[in-house]
Length: 572
Image (cartoon, rainbow, N blue to C red; front, side, top):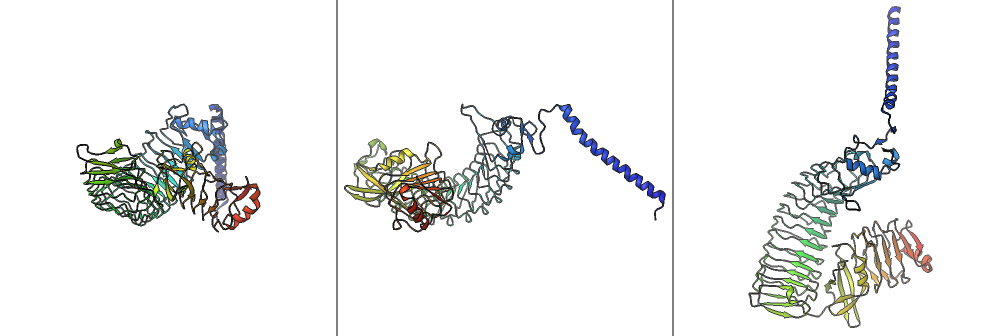
């Protein structure tokens, strides 16, 4: 039991402590008030607000960008509301007048926690980029800088990462499981682990120091550029969806593309290949296999081939009798004695010097100065063009986009027709070139009507955002649209079907993420000319517009043909 004296002493100590604590709190409250008056602050930032000053944003260029584009009321302070609205930051390299913007340091960018898209390119002195607080980022484009380290482990929502032309020696994307596009070309990477990135569609890792690349888990890969590395092996047997493959300038001795049936472009030059089997790659448009050790090259099944470069090999013969689409050929520096391109009426240029040629047969329309051969040899130049056959593939050589491959469906006089086989997606889609196709396809002295679009012709294609090239009109004589013809397109905003369209295949417009309007002008569609899945997969972002006279009938018909109830149908 404590005595009374001890209890009084304890009570006094407790009271003194309370007074000291209260006094301290009062002092703490008073300090900011006093300092505020002494500092004569123009703006008192509320809790959570951020001043636009050199402490929070050390880089002058970045501060100017924030002041101009984010500080809406121009008070020199970023409010909570202003910060919350920032979902995109795009730091341009030049302004409209051509003046250069400089951003050397993006310290402070972590403030923008709602950021989904960041673009900061072509800043050679930008050596670091801290994004660990920007956890909602989905798109990052930071190429052509001087970045030495890039930590994206916190960016679990990231879908696209473009960090090409930097100074990276390592890159860990194991936490970015939603990644669909990775472009890390022209760095100093010695390794790249992509086993967790199973959603990857596009991969660019060219011009690094990679000695191995395991892509067995990346089964959705569509576009692969891994050229200019130190690869000795490349297993692509699991990558059956590949359209584009660039693996040149490596140390490959074998390359198996027999499982890659959708290949359109194959660049495998400057390796050590002794064999190359492209028999099953019937969709090939471009084949570049120069500077290898090939002794034979069979092209019988590659009827869509437009560009062929097989120079600097050990070929003794080259049969192009089935390659009706050929426009450009480079077969220099081989052991060839005879060449015959009479089956390729559009062939425009042949480079065949440094061979042992005695005879060259070219199409009648080819100019002599487009044949590059050894003038010191006695070479017989003959001109001959074989007639076009149904099923032959060719390209209209007008240098207008889009770059399309066509399939001859009829050669009968008065009824010459073609179908669009594929758009190679090699460049920006151009409405000017497309409109010319509506008038007909010129092939030699004949004009063919474009009457149909093959299945998957534009599937997965990315259209241009400029000059209205994100809209396409299916007009002219086109009657048929194949299944998945426009499935999975990107940037394409409007598709207009003309009055001549009669038949549409399954999933023709499925999963076209940017499609806002599908305008249907034709009144000829019926349950017999549509499939049960014609309109399946069209997103709720799309509005379908139809002729006013067919609004009721088409609305019922389209629902039966797969159109979701979430997709609006309106009159034009």
